[in-house]
Amino acid sequence: MMHVGMAIILFLLAAILHLLYCRQTTAKGLQAKVFLVIVLGVLMFMEVLFIFIPFDPWGPAPTLRSGQALPLTATTIYLLLIPAYLIFYVTTDLLSPSKKILKILQTQGKADYNQLLSAIKADNMIEGRLQELIVSSCAYKRGWKFFLTPHGNKLLMIVKLYRWLCGRSMAG
Image (tube, rainbow, N blue to C red; front, side):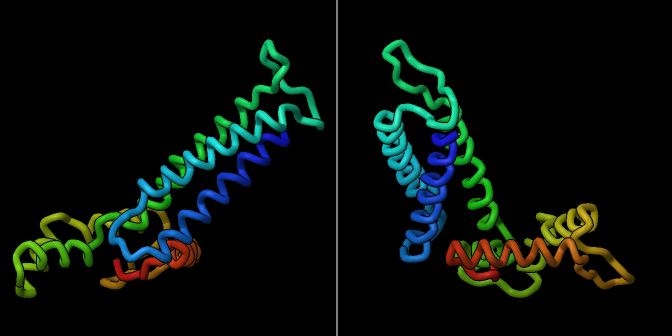
């Protein structure tokens, strides 16, 4: 159990280091490769710690032939936390209408309102997302207007907090 606790604490440390790096760097885009370097470095450090702390004082641990503890559960949990973190980290940076507009302006140099609107409509970005929000009970439609539900407000607060932690604004 001690190894599992250490694995979770060390993973949180790796995530905090990554978030601090993201907030300090001037590099654009996702910093997933940096996270992988940090998390693998912490993993190696954790495995070295497990060699020097080879037993769990609160319960029996499976052992190797040499009598050394085998903290496979802790290592597995640590490894499973990596994609979970990456999923939440990457989803805050997925393509949005704002990013779509910026990409169009970058590639074409200029565009009028109708060109931008048709590009966004062509990808069905707005209608599809609104329908997803309604189906997931984050929003509802009354007449021609859309409103957030209490569940949607809670999720928006979480997204705002997470984007703030990652050093990103809410605009895309």
